[in-house]
Length: 172
Image (cartoon, rainbow, N blue to C red):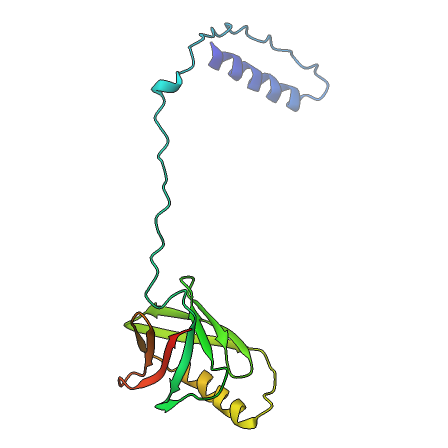
């Protein structure tokens, strides 16, 4: 029945379009049965699945992270200048610290057995002593060549690829 009504409507439309003087035919609208609405009770809270409980996991901190380390040796030479440079690794893969004259920050990737330090940015203060400026430049140049590190309770050592200690730090 529905298909016939649609077909008659289309035919009437085509006829009306082909004869512009003809009056349009109004097709009766079929009366559709009213849908029956059946109310169903809402599910009780007890029957709904429980949401998973998410618990915070402890963040694993490497033995060298979140510690302020103070430089004691650079490229085999003891550091006697005060204050000595510092470095701090965070578990967010960033580093920060102070050189001999400037503060710095950067990032790192990897971990103890294979680490890359990079994107070092520092303030641009001039040191009163030119030798400190040279030593600070050597410090920044050294830490970006580190390939791995070791850490004990009170000592952090940064190594080159050929296992040469480049910088040794103690806890501040």
